[in-house]
Length: 474
Image (cartoon, rainbow, N blue to C red; front, side):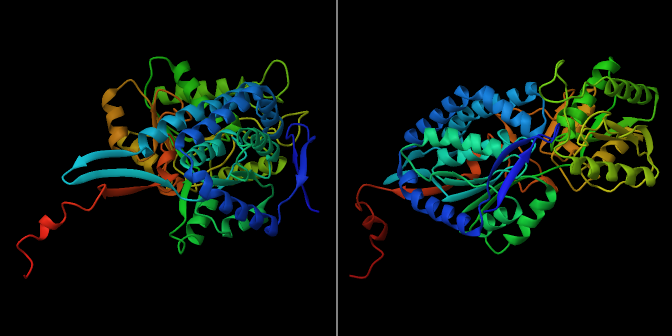
């Protein structure tokens, strides 16, 4: 029996241990999901909604325990994991509303009948979850998929299996009368490969752009499988002017360093004018970064950020940082470890990369790259100089500049005078380029969880012969 373990990155303590699902176990789970699908899809949507509401109640009853599980597995502070669980709970109501609005039945009177629009579930959906928001992000796929009438086989990240197991417990309670509608399987790459290669009708994935590109390739000859990809980004933040430099610096720090830089919507590139404001802002960002409280999830005073997900992740980020320095980047703040802490802890880092070539890659860590430009045309050009397109932002009081960013920028989430990481669950979330495949999640998840069926129908066949009157031989 092969076992999987997860660890608290702050201490190395084992958080969870369980059996890995091998290829045969994955196939069996998919077969169970396939057999459970017809009855689940045939239920009135109100009954599936009621199950989702029971799941919501189960989350609410366990919210503190689940927040602690997420904190232990990811290293995130409790203030952030409580917010994550609250988002999971809120997702249920948003998904119910979105299902009715975007995938509900419609009908209108037509001559000799009715035009009717219905939506049907795809079938068996595979959901692969990430480690950074191990509850909220897969939850955003799972809830709408089940409400739409699909069955789900969910593989959490191998870094955060305990969070997936906690979600599975809540669904087991909510779906007590509907076995195998939701299943959670645990494992790493081999388990995920078996799931993706199996008989599925959809893959709902949140993770790296590299993995997303891999899925695009392997599903090129499987057009029957719906593919929804929520990927990373090399996100730009243009900070052009502000009456309050400290407030602008706060937007930058929250954009670049929240969740220890482990959000796909974090700002990776700060673009500033090459003038006094730009210089003052960079200084203010560096000073504010120095004051960030870093610590373990259960410490007092409560930290703002914790460690990266693992020692290996920290080493990889440091190697990428060193590469930028070798290319000529000027170090404003180094990416250091934290004395007396595990190897997963790092300090927020700031580099000036003006005038040097920087690979268009996402560094999934608190690393902010500064580019100084002569004018706003150059700022727009620099912001768009990426193959990604997830999030972007502008710090400016100038409405005309904001309009330019809205028209000329290329990203799925574009914020003004607010962190690039801010997003409303009542709106779509996703990007273009290598940040996604034009199937945004959040409120628009209902769109990829069901397909439309358009019908022209009448209760009997009367009225059709008139169309042939006078046009047939006697």
